[in-house]
Length: 362
Image 1 (spheres, rainbow, N blue to C red):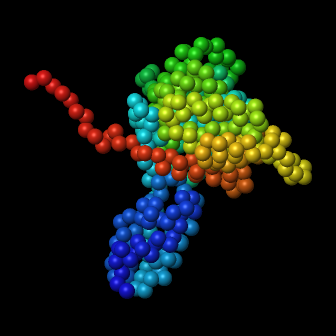
Image 2: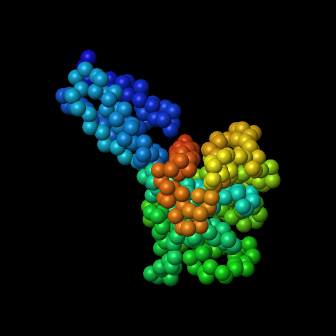
Image 3: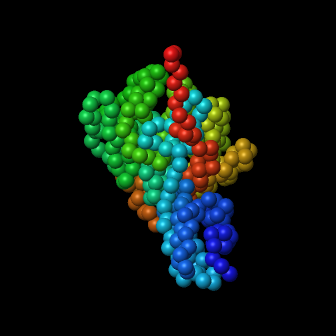
């Protein structure tokens, strides 16, 4: 059999990406196939953060191609190439930020901020450039969770540089005020401040900006959903009926303004006893799964209620960085990959593909 590009691609249709459930050719992950004698070289490109999966994929591709007669060596250049995707009608993606997604809940106390921070860290651990915007003006928690102290710098008084913690960029009103200072602001002041934090922060070439939304579905949340250019939103709930009622309201709000729902995360799905390891669904069971099924949305995963998650977040080293090889970090990484794949399946932003047309009177 003569080696050719078609033969190489047909052979690689047996190699399945475990995240997408597709073969690497159908997923358009193979490019630049070159054959020189018995030497085959190609590019492997993932459009989602999958750093930990690349070695296994490379090995599978190498072993598959080496089974072909005439193949002496295989060279693979692996990379992660995340595209910019479309946002709500009438808005454009931010400069230097490819994709923005929100993490939201209908009510407080469901662990939304902890989930948002760990998802951001999980995406970074898998090879993406990530930032997080703390949009909860009244109760900013991101500085504490990331263990960041100090104030952001501004060289011109117009824009500010993001703070950094555990390898991700961050911005929060909590960096600009004292920890015990209450924000006694009305809604318009809050939304104005958040737009400034979003647009006047010099984000540095982000693949993803995670927006930790304030809880609720009032004027502030609606205004943010309309003005922040979002690729999608993740809804966080607990299995408890009270939380689910409000989570459904939050979901409907984003649907009305044209923001795709990337899926449902069920936090505090199980309580794990620190003494004996006994697991008990103290907030109910299956509520998040049922909500996802009712709306035809992806169920991204369930997270346990454990002392470990709370202590690590309060201590400024969230679970994904405190115990990166642990079971809970693996759950966050799995959810983060599903979110990234959901974004990758959205329509791409084409605004930069078209020239600006200027009409002049002559």
